[in-house]
Length: 205
Image (cartoon, rainbow, N blue to C red; front, top):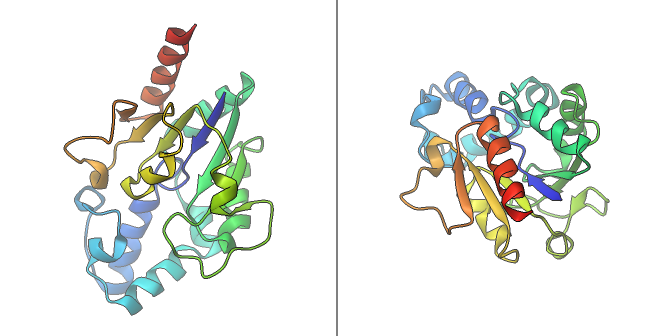
């Protein structure tokens, strides 16, 4: 079984960090529970210059390493790995954040989980020629059975996999009236995700 897992706001509490950072930098007090948009510039009502500074500060190594783990994430991923499944973290973070992101995973006991950077949101000005920086055509050759994702803006990256089962990690910005299809399931915790995957696996046997 091949499993896709998003990094930010699936494995770690990125939005909660950026909520505090926007308040510190610009006095924009938008609590996590009020973050209605995945687009942080829109969420915090920032100018282009403010938004660029927010992303720069939020992707500094010390900042990335400070993100809290989403409860239960490392336990579930390691359980999947121990059962012989291949887990790939596919992040939309810029490739420049690869090393601290890899370090964060290792520090949280996820040494056996693969990490790839994919330009999901058009933020990279160029693609590094590196095994861990995915070009879109290489990503589209990858096959997954399950995915864990929070961003509606990233759902389009699943269009080539009609049988994919997508676990949508519940966040304020993805509470749309309807999910894209019957293969999308809303989950409220990593225990929910774990149980859903187990149930779907049992149903296929």
